[in-house]
Image (cartoon, rainbow, N blue to C red; front, side, top):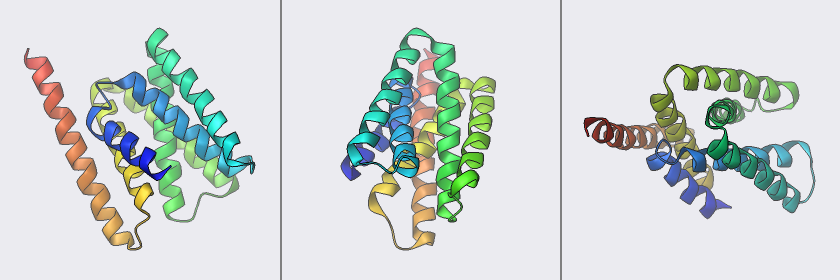
Length: 169
């Protein structure tokens, strides 16, 4: 799964806004996978099936019901970000994990609703950077945070540049 995280994380980092339906499907897959592993305690294939199901539903919603899918992506993306950050501080247990996810989800939906393009750019860059770093499991927290910030900045700059070119046409 490490290579998949790197590839999908890189895609999110650089193309999250442009290919938002892939963003929605991928977010659904990884969120479903993580929560199935965290809360269902079953074999790995169960997590993959749950992740594929959530991802497929998200991608189909993104194609056919764009506004609902964008809200779902904002909720799942924001929830995953806050859940991941809680985990970095060993706060991803029981109700705290759910509270972090729900609070992050509410913030994500709010952000996506207010500024759609920039929300997708920021959320996809943060998620992409997080997925890439998860694949490497760095020992140093300081180095991990530094790489995270650098990857986020690179992703935001790259996607902002594409957005600027699109708007100037």
